[in-house]
Image (cartoon, rainbow, N blue to C red):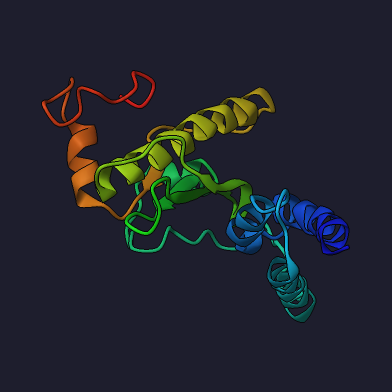
Amino acid sequence: GNAAVFLQVMGKLVWPSNMTRPDVSQNVSHLCTFSHCAGKEHLSYAFYVMGYLVKTKHLGITFGGSLRPPPGIPNPPESFFQSSGLYIMHDSSWGTKAKPMGGHVIMYNNGPLGWSAKIGHIIPQSTAEAELVEGTRAAKEGMFTIQLLQNNNRRVISPVIICGDNKAMVDMVQQEGASVRTRYYERAIL
């Protein structure tokens, strides 16, 4: 039935989503949450994503070229160029679901080294909390990536740029210690 075909299609979509096409990661991740109850509508969305991949097969990952700074940062620090353009971008939704979707990408030499898109593990009370959870996941994966690069004799010089689009989250991160608003966060996030 539809469920068996859905699982086969999702199996074919997960690989490019994880390996070469981060642009469909969020959609594929969301569709995978319906594996246990997939219907005709879910299968049609999965085929839509597959059609998008075929139609945009020219969008491959290309490493190299002149380093492009992160969007919104016209003058990156010197360490950006010395570290071959290493930076991290993250974002999260909030207000549409109890546990919002979040994602991040780690860029190096103009190409993505790692990325993730998944539903958060807490129920945030604000957009700043949703962004903080995803920013924390991005920073943890970024630290792993930095260690991996250094272990492979690639130079990484601090600071590494991490970009988010939420001012309240940035303000929380820059305060030391817990406040009345943040004291209930998990220790790992703080």
